[in-house]
Length: 124
Image (cartoon, rainbow, N blue to C red; front, side, top):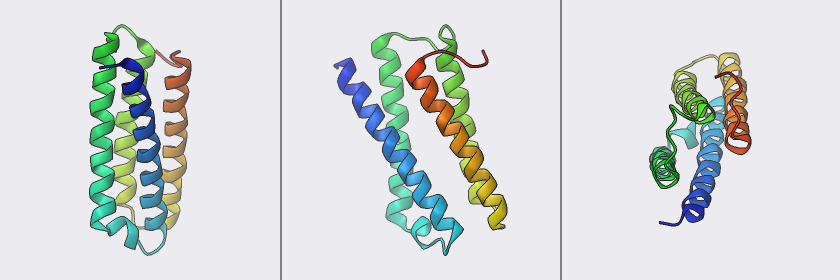
């Protein structure tokens, strides 16, 4: 499969995943009706699944090992943090706590994007 096709697919799915994350997050700040919608819920999880599949495909096509590329290892760690923060945020009852998690998750998303573009590790 062509690397550029998979890369652009991965980028498009990443944007969709982020949009769905914010749709669900802002919905939870209000009534939560959109976040509880089965189509949005399943679509969000399906999108994230395809995002992971495309990420593995990119690593395989480019023959990149995250243990050798510290920026990629950092990105994987931040993706796990993003998932964990999303899960924890979705279980919060207080709006103020939800907003804190939303801000922190937004920072994590920004770092993931920066790593994807710069391909230079911040910490490792």
